[in-house]
Length: 494
Image (cartoon, rainbow, N blue to C red; front, side):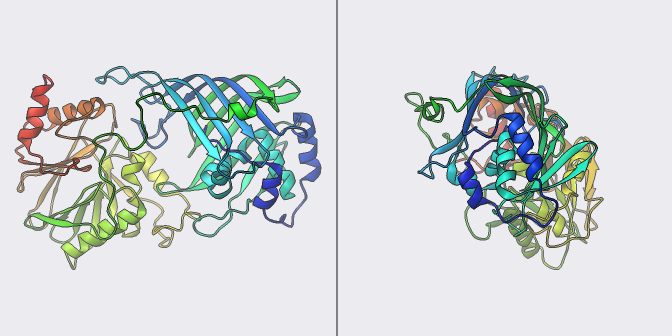
């Protein structure tokens, strides 16, 4: 559960004047009294939880799929609703020992620790963090009371809404909506946040199985959904209002000895500012450099781009570089290697360019739904070019061959693996180039090695010499088929 906290005093500064509609004051006051929120300044609660991989799961529509669920065996979350004097102080901390999922073909992962720490500054300035203050049952009631929220009745529930003062990137207001039942319990809170792939991403928190725990009504079950897909599920068995050891609960312990911060060894280089470098690989074929390496291919009457990158800005830069390298032609297709959000966040730029996204059929339905959503909050390139709301995605099968009007051939192959069940590699037979995402041909870590083995098995009969990685090695250097084969031989893989 993505969380963060404030205080009633901070809420007053954080929220705008009430909207001109029916006042929710009496409804909120009744619920606050029934739930024990009136005297609640902080709370800690605990139990067990399952945390999914939204935007990074094997099946993009199943964040809680078997190979993506991390179990938090002693989940504890602490929230401070009072404003700390130091803006860098934590107002929310969630932690607990974890057991990551076992992935076939990858060594069993070591247990870890779940850490989700949010400061007062983060909670007040970043809605993706701050929303978690308002979406807890008690935080929602405090925020609604401070904001003089509005209310209407729907299906026997009192539906209470307010908008925080923080604005979205587009300048529009966010909205928080809570649903209160006849027992004056908050059963659900939802909001929308700006998301590079989804646009106005619906985030929902469902609360059920309430129990009185030390004078406060606490939900025994918490389910979080994003884009209508369950991403977090917790069973709460204990809670303490206004804990006497609040400072201790909100203190992050030092890292274990010998474990320093910063990026891991061999991490991909950070993306450079400015236009990406462009390298000609062959007649009408160009490599667009940087992290999340792309390709641009002249198909005669149009351009085909491979991979749009990790952000709207990168996507715009890739589209511009492709059109500069191949002038006078439109970008008709953009290949998405797989729909993990770090590889799909540039698709907004591709769609705004008028391109159709080529992705494996396993991704089609979910990716089409996500890209076709409303984009009133993002302020990105696609939000500025409304009109296309359907047929944004074209599915391909396990092998797809594209032949341009100029005879140029681009082949797409699905690679079955546990990282993504809709992953494509791209083969250019004339140039003897193979392009792949999320692998490295030299010194792979165990997770990358499993995917590299799958790529090697899928492409073993292809005649290529140049192996291009979406994430270049560090330091960067050309990778060949011989390098890939040597790596696989070194692991006992033919």
